[in-house]
Amino acid sequence: MADDRARADDRQVVAEAAVCLTGAGMLRGAKDMLFALVSVVLFAMAFGIAARGAGLEGWAAVLMSGMVFAGASQFAALELMTSPVPWLPLLMVVFAVNARHILMGAALYPWFGRLPFVQRLLPAALMTDINWAQAIQAYDRGERDLGHLVGSGLLLWVTWIAGTAAGAALVDTVAMDLDRLGMDLIFLLFFVCMLTGLRRGRSDDIAWAVAGGTALLAWQVLPAHWHVLAGALAGGVAGLLHHERRRTKGSGP
Amino acid sequence: MSPIETALAILAIGLVTYATRIGGILIMARIPVSPRIEAFLRYLSGSVLVAVVVPPVIATGPAAWLAVAATLAAMLKTRHALLSLVVGMATAAAYRALA
Image (cartoon, rainbow over all chains, first blue to last red; front, side, top):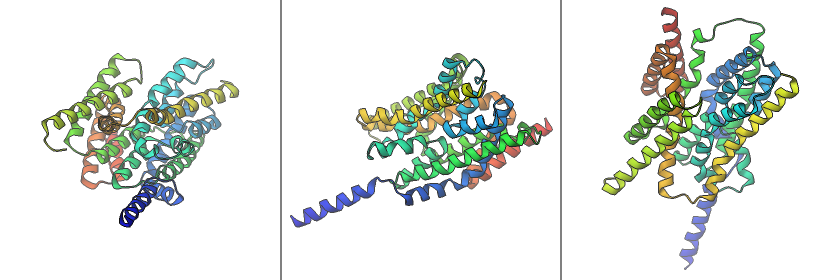
């Protein structure tokens, strides 16, 4: 009886330690993000330069980086920042490029879901591709402090804003061909690095092949930017079907 | 664009973007997470990135193909993301300088 109570207490302690949001966690998250900062600065500078090239003032480029904080959609929005504002295309494009966040947030739900609602608002605002991938890996390692996502996100946010400002300022001082330096590929190569870290086995290859193939097809036939959603959903379904088939065969996990 | 127009457009896309960030969490709060949903989401995570990367890499041409191959090789060999990025960008820059 006393043993049972002791065990129940233990379990409660484990549960309390299981999910939280602390400064120590934020520090760990920020440290996990240091490796990425140089490339984030370069990518942010590329955005600042592109924004000035598209006719945006420097303050607007910086404001956009601060408020939107989602590189791919910011690049995509630049084409549509015209007067009068094409509201529907602009918002649809930004939604399409960023719709993956819905799936990313859902993937982090086992983590988010155990915190009070108010505590979910800030971490959600700071979730980007890079620190989300880091958070997924950290969660697999046993990290349960959502401060990890907040700390890495805050560091990225500040870096992203500063890099944008630097890039926008650079346009007025130096002329250069960034494509020649391979700067246009930073974003894509970054994702390649993250995928190498995310891969857990051959079942991923099947899902990812379907995702890539579907995205490529959707890219040809659907309006711009919807290929991300199409490919991601197809990959998820393919992975699920593979998972189910293996489970009914009863051969391993 | 007037400053007001610019600021309003940025505010609007900021709000849409935040809605996508909180949206998945709100939806999941209303759906119980079964093992099937968990498996689906596990494969979804990588698939999102693959879907972002593949079409533009194919479209950009040999410079991007070589850069991706070089980054992938460096990443598998060293597991160092920044180094692998630099290797990839240098490969693209070299190809473009020669081609």
